[in-house]
Length: 135
Image (tube, rainbow, N blue to C red):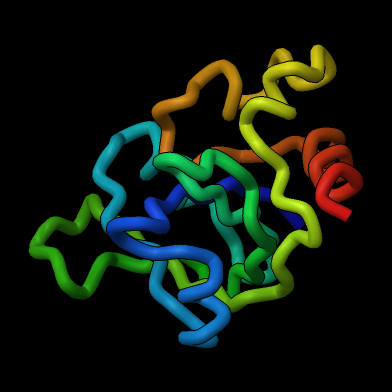
């Protein structure tokens, strides 16, 4: 199993609570080449943090990846890929970007080093630390 972080804009677009309400969604709208490289590595059974951008800037919940990546059916561009996710659970305490940046153990974390990337892998070590901070 692999772990991922998926960014969304809760005020304008989508949030973890929207995912809970919907029960399932297609993770789409990604066109950055590096992020698409990561999307192509996502596998059914993986887990993903849902990270709220904008004013919130926090890890809000955990999602289950329930499909392998597939071509975006809404785009006429075969390089664009999407995958399906379902809610797992929201974090009891959202983990803020400020908390993560203030903790030197996260210095090599993609969220800290490549903050503009919308889909990124999360090493197991960071996954476990964020889960502890969120409970």
